[in-house]
Structures are given as C-alpha cells and as structure tokens.
Image (cartoon, rainbow, N blue to C red; front, side, top):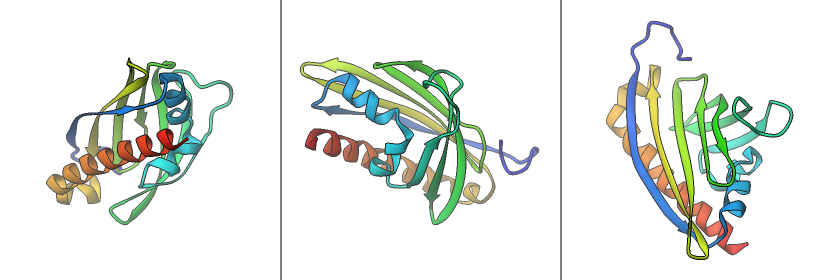
Length: 155
C-alpha cells in the first residue's frame, strides 16, 4: 500500500464538498464513473482506464496516472461500493497517496446535488508538507467539482 511497510502514515480528512449540477443523476453518474473521462475534469489526472473486465461493480479496478505536486505516479483504484446512479466509493490500493472517496448523487429539482467526501493517507515524500497537502487536496477537489459542473452543463 505505502512505499515501506513500517512507514508512518498520516490521514488527512478533506471535509465534504457539494455542488449542484443541472443534469439528471444518471448523466452525472455515467460521466464520473467512467475513468476515461477523469482527465477531462480532474486537473491532476493525466490518464485513466479500466483494468478489470466486465461491467463495473464492487471490486472492479482501474489505473490512473496522476501528477500531484510535480510528482507523477501510477495508482490502481478499486470500486468499494457501487449503486448507480446514486452512489459510488473508491479507494486507491497503492502509491504514496492513498485516497478513499465517496460520491453521492441526490435528485434536487431538475438536477443533481453531487456530494464528495474523502480522506487521504500520505506517506513518504508527501508527509513533509502535511498541512500544505491537505489544503492543496481540498482546493483541487473544489476545482474538480467546478470543472465537472461546467463540462456537464455545457453539454
């Protein structure tokens, strides 16, 4: 999971973030649950693709190449809960940054309230700047949700 088995890890909680998107939950879910779209709305993602076969479900995996703070890493991500079109959770299973996230989509009028909650477990290089890493992740998640809203509402 982390770089070294006995290495100290730090868990950073990123408080819950929400944004309203003027699209039905199915549209939003279909878009965010496809890793091939990640680099279009997640600023730190360079590439993502499924590595498991079949329809996505709990246990399905995909890989991502991300650039966090100038460091490019490849991460494998596992689906830990899957309830289309209302909820999905994921966790990264390797790398110096272990991220667990949950996305909940709630019908709100003619659109969708997207709520994202996560925490990040850091080790290695990233422990040095614990406070900065926490602030940067929160800011990044906020920007990603804003990007998602802009892209989906533009069609």
